[in-house]
Image (cartoon, rainbow, N blue to C red; front, side, top):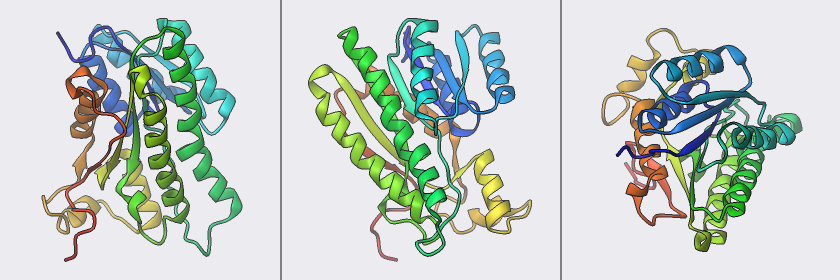
Length: 258
């Protein structure tokens, strides 16, 4: 039996990057997968890829910054597959801003995507689980920056720190409903989004990965496939009774002094 046999998994921001890797890993482990994203082309391409392997998959075009669209993505998943057993909140915004130069609009954008969207996606998924009196699992993708982060990530850090508190609060509230909710603080990871960020904000060239690797203990960035496998573990019964945990998935040790 595969880890997610006969489960329905909704992945927000699942059309590319880590979200797409999670969708692939979940499908490989027997799940039916719904993925959301703002752009139809990558979402539909991923669904075609998954269905070609025999998996059940659907793309729901969604801008999670819009609460109504986020809520509708849960409803669309229930309509298509009958329920939501597992939710992974992968959608994220990493646009730079410091305490001094962040505009109200940028601050609100971070809160909308990195905090408000997971809140209302969880609200919808948990409501579905409760309506069926069924157990379920949720994984919220956060960042090691939630502990403090760089000065140019002020609104991002504020939102991700809030997501840490929300994860624990929701896990505590629904532990007796057998709904397990955990978070993953991921470190520096090689994704399409990170490539764009390095080039746009940090002057990264074609060799930015090689340059970054020189500063990292393991000599490379994290890989989305590795993280996706760990997310599937947390979604599955293999992770047992664990709930309310926010795990640092990184090669640097948080709080250590060089």
